[in-house]
Length: 416
Ligand code: SF4
Image (cartoon, rainbow, N blue to C red; front, side, top):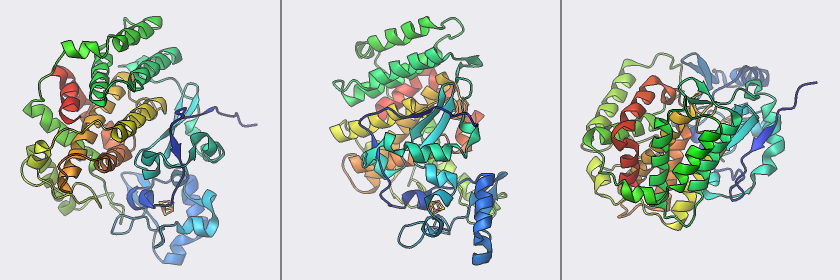
């Protein structure tokens, strides 16, 4: 009999979700297919019925084909899925059935985290996360690699003990959960903790001493921040942030076989990337279906994201669910160590702040609203842990660069 794998549903009592049929995920996500999905699609006979292939290959992997507007080929006018309508929920590709949950195996079993690209997740609408256990368990049976694996790395090639992962998770979560601390300070403190964990010498600090270390760091907050003011980010740091945003919102389209993108498409992407690096003029094509004709200057002119209660609730729910749901490191984040993953999350936080300001500037707001934060968070989180290039050496080098001279703290502080 197959071994039953422990499934750990995100234990955040104030987080809810149900699908409200907005169709956003089908309009916006590229669906990577597993062998079982390909077999099911073939048995359903879609290619013959439509007279054209329904999948495309990209860099050695197969995806559902998309229409020219980026929507999935199976998305109907009414926002529903053709496969679902004809064959039922469980006959869709497994990625479609799982979304917005994300399965991340670790030593204790499989953690089901949440992707905040889903507007119902952001709006905290629906039933308890626990109520999705049966569907998740059924999908989990089709993802055999999502069973228990070794704990994540601490840093470098040092493997963490489960108790060490718990200690770091709990420490970060405890700080983020301190509702009496204003959002700006909580996020600054998070960036400071990320820098501290990134710089810790884990070859000398292990076991109980990790619990002591994180306890010490967290108990030093928020007072420690008063003694450690940071300057605004330098030119190079601001440039790295814009390039990080660009890397997180670019997305290949799977309308055709794009295993070899055309020269024109490559040139176009290179031009956009150059403009993000320069940071002058109008921000080019922010993202598909998200045309915001703002200039780089107007982003800089907008005040930081305000820490209103709804914004604070959203951002803190996202950070806590990312850490506790296994999406910040290990199998949920490109196999990265805790030290690297938590710094990447701090960079993502800075990216959300910058993009929220870009969105607000683009829609003509004088200050960042909850709507702009939600849009920006959705864009950044949709790529997190999925877009292969965000797990590349280039991204690690970006973090190395920002780890010096308080780069992460400066970028978070300058946007939040
Ligand atoms: S197959 Fe269905 S559920 Fe999956 S992306 Fe396409 S329309 Fe959406």
